[in-house]
Length: 197
Length: 87
Image 1 (cartoon, one colour):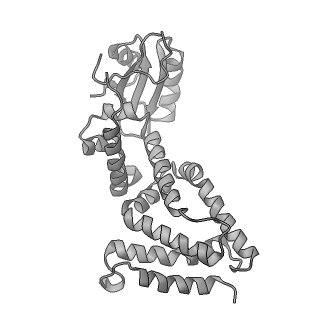
Image 2 (cartoon, rainbow over the protein chains, first blue to last red):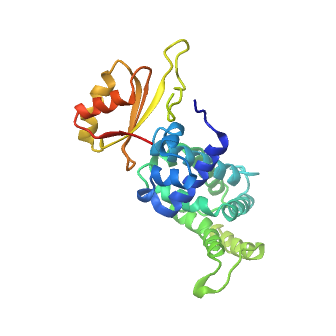
Image 3 (cartoon, one colour):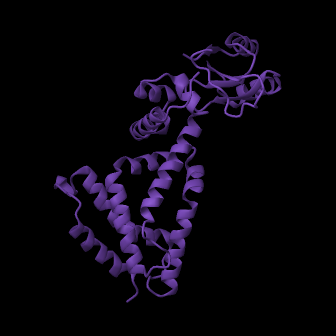
């Protein structure tokens, strides 16, 4: 009689992330996953009820990892500049170390399970971020801005640098490696833009 | 016990041991599902079942204490579906 094997389960999860990133939701199948793991499709269906439960479980686990890393040493009550700096450092640490996670979340977000995954895994995280912004605006440490504008300015530049790093080059193929000096220079510009004068 | 068999996590203590049977099917569309579901729901020897219609194989999972793969293949066949045991 078969029982769940933790090592095999870990392998399935790792391969599932890689496969979803490579093939997208439409190209992801349990057959391909089984082949990548060198196990039978039947074994996969012992572990998971269906493709949806596999991807939702993975999304929830990756979401927890990402939010835990992003919220390390962070509190929504922190002064804006200090809180945003911690956010930059935490996000940079996580996304530099986990290059596949970003692509995995994107693929899952655009799958039929995207809304479900985001609601379940991310609602606490979003509430903490909302509270941080709310407090900062109330204390006049942050300009009141539409959410999309705030997020684009607050984190867009950081994610652009991280993307350059993962690609190994910036505009025109210029070699690029993420470093603290570049991050700090960019962070200061973002802070100047977001804080009231 | 078959290679694909496992015990059901919610198998009630003292009850007949439940086996997981797995099949490739062509139960794909909503209409297919609605045609098959009442028969699986009402079957006295099917403890729990689901079909992964998001995946290419439309895998049917059945937890049962008494049915054999042949019984399930016949049941699905009688409903007009192709059903083969998943290797």
